Length: 278
Image (cartoon, rainbow, N blue to C red; front, side, top):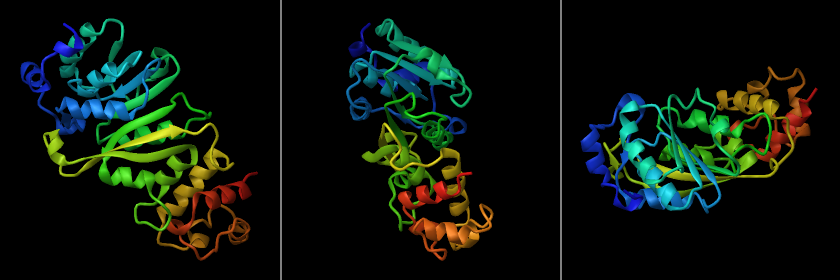
């Protein structure tokens, strides 16, 4: 059996009794044309290893392999999906490795060879946490060259948001400091089985060789987190725990002490973090 002769996903789901489970954040994409399109958004996969989280019955997995991925490492928490993924592995000898377990607990790097891309229809319940981990490693550049990830539309908008918008916050700053994120696809609820209550979007993030502006990562993360945890407060109040002379440091960074976090750009936050370095 080759990848072209694998049965349709609806037949696979019926054969293996793979009803989506809400507890696992599962919403399956059954249209192989859509999964192929998502795979293409990941860029040229030839010569790349690809990390996929939450493959489910393997729709996107098929697309990644068809697009020429050198090797796909798929991490799946639901053991019910293993027989379907095994069929894909048998149709692509040596190109698909499936690991069972929680993606938050598994270190995939020992099973991947650079260069590496990440492409996944992320389970809704762990998507944001995984993204933040991939954006905040101790060293940069990271292990990945690009991330192509499915999120709830609301989360996707937070990743690409600009200052002054309601969606702008910590996620936008972390993503835009070290990568170039953009929304590349929108998907309605009816594209999934079962249909979620919200629309979805695919975000593609290319890793930058260096952060856009210099700053110590932990200091920047702490500053941004404090600023947006009390986003309705003026920054002189929201950040008073960072330094006793925070007003002077804000002014030195080009920020008015009376500004609120949602109006301050990435460059200014990085400048503020530099004033806080020991």
